[in-house]
Image (cartoon, rainbow, N blue to C red):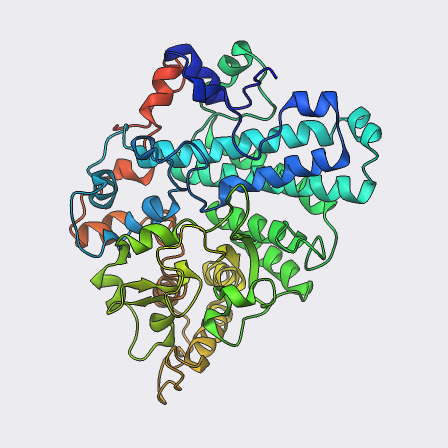
Length: 494
């Protein structure tokens, strides 16, 4: 079977390094055009969509085998979002292991740091897979040949459009202007044609265009598939539309979209704060809108590999993060246990049983309803409805204080009291910023929040970090600039 390079950067790699045997292997789960053209089936087409999800997983070694040098052992969200922020550190006991993570932590990295190569590689491999899936699903001849029903075709297209939008959302918020690849790449000329950065405004336009298509294609139900409940739903699409609007400061649009989501009546705050993360309650809770469905015991592996480094002493909260929680806040106990060195949200259980397991079945949560409500609160505050914002804040706080603690007790009276009425936007925004930190702690949201609030420099330098203005964007991986012959340019200051 001949090799078809579907990733721009895989093509460029072949031009600049000696050909190694492993470069000719198709990534696990990725279908090639040969497989479709020689013996296509309906399952072939839907499997191409399923494969497109995989780069959002925490499964180990999807891109290479223990390739620490290129930062691809696992997806690097926790490093580039949580460790980069004031919430997390590389390890409980600091040492010289994987020093590149420390460089991200203290903002003393350069453009060759593997954290950025890793997240870039995962996202563009995800884009590549969605482009391949879309090329099949939009081909009427192939769809007719395999007898794919209109309902499955539409759902599959909706999933693929959403996933491409999600990968580009991650790219544009991390790197700003990035190459825009919208179809599979068949040869070197195709690769060079797209090996240039496109203004971020156009990337946002593409994200929104893909989401508009996805919303029209997906069914109006909580789950787009009653059996595979992990698949992208219409609710997930609307939520990502709202998040895109928030990041572009289109606050009235945020409110409108969250209202639209609420009208569906699919989501609500769970009674217990930890239910969103509890492995035993996956797809049975009320709050999770989009998550990656890790499953243990699969071949190839599809488990939550993040649980492995947690067992090696990696990933710990900062003292500043712990101190951010108000007295007796039940959310702290469900987030982290300092004495046992457990981050329960990442483990997916309240006992630490998954710690060290490189194939755990706990899911990775990307969007949940509490996050969406806080987007709406922020947008209401920005548009002058401070009381509406405070009302939502108090909903979040009420759920938190009424959650039975991890030890089975009830929080004392007076825990997390309601915020009082206020017409001061600055006061309310400060409350919102605080609430987002503790509600969404260690969920890879903090650094993105600090950047869009434009408070990253003030907050992080106060914690002794070397954050500079240039760090509002990460550097484009130097290796990809080199492979492009300089047609891909670097962010200022790197």
